[in-house]
Image 1 (tube, protein in one colour):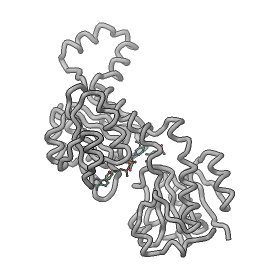
Image 2 (tube, helix red, strand yellow; image 1 turned 135 degrees about the horizontal axis):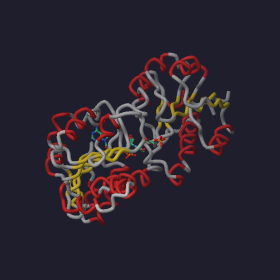
Image 3 (tube, rainbow, N blue to C red; image 1 turned 30 degrees about the horizontal axis):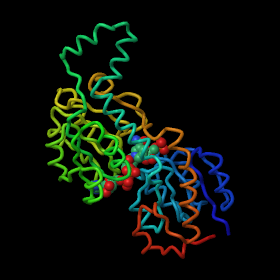
Length: 333
Ligand SMILES: NC(=O)C1=CN([C@@H]2O[C@H](COP(=O)(O)OP(=O)(O)OC[C@H]3O[C@@H](n4cnc5c(N)ncnc54)[C@H](O)[C@@H]3O)[C@@H](O)[C@H]2O)C=CC1
Ligand SMILES: O=C(O)C(=O)COP(=O)(O)O
């Protein structure tokens, strides 16, 4: 029997056609939790974007579900622990967005330090001369050259950021779950414990996934270690305690915060909106470059089909699931 697959986003037509070769497909773009609860029992597999949360309540109704294929590198919108317990395979799309996202992270950082976003506003308001006031230093514009940059999370994106920063003449530090000897020889980045890294860096970049271990990893205590420094967040909003960050910006302790991600998205209003000099804020769009998005749909389809064929894909997030429900028992193709 062909698997029934729910596509819970607007996916590229070509990727959808590829999926239709193997599965009975129903497209329900961005359903509400209620809609999903009423529908999920029909599916053997789903393809899902970061906008749709797959909660414990949804999974409770997912009687047939065997595969959740994320159309993204992040998988924090899935209750992975519960999925694993139920023997559901969860996959992500690794690598495809990294170059575009890393480029964007560097863009955010340069913008934050050189105030490009702010200068753009000044000239449009007819305030050409005011740049002189700024330049003479009442608030300070800084160059990246010679700075110490600490990267938290040295995965696909973290490495791509590091590679881009080397030509800027910075000193690189990193912290990740595991020490990476290849990174150290290729990128000349020094491994440090997170707290030492926060203390020694002038700039900190977050490129971690959001998990129960990394939730609020930049908490109130750690924000104190960022006094006089810049922070860039390209991972997920809840890697930081946004309230503590906002307070530190308000008090002039954190020099700047640039982020593409927020604790509660979408964001319509935020206290940080007031701090135009100190913050650069974008609506979760670092991965949105046509070149980056080109193959994401195909990879999400490939991961899902691979599992239904009894092949474990490299992009499997919850490897422990293999012990709970062996791959042979999810084979449908
Ligand atoms: N702003 C955006 O549009 C985008 C954001 N992202 C976010 O970036 C995250 C990272 O993506 P990739 O680099 O592709 O992932 P990856 O899996 O290649 O790298 C993640 C790194 O974080 C480390 N890590 C994981 N858990 C850790 C922990 N508890 N403590 C210390 N280190 C830990 C891993 O060892 C790995 O080096 C994604 O999970 C996603 O949330 C990804 C794409 C686009
Ligand atoms: O891949 C990820 O984790 C992302 O955050 C990308 O999000 P998007 O699918 O571009 O809204």
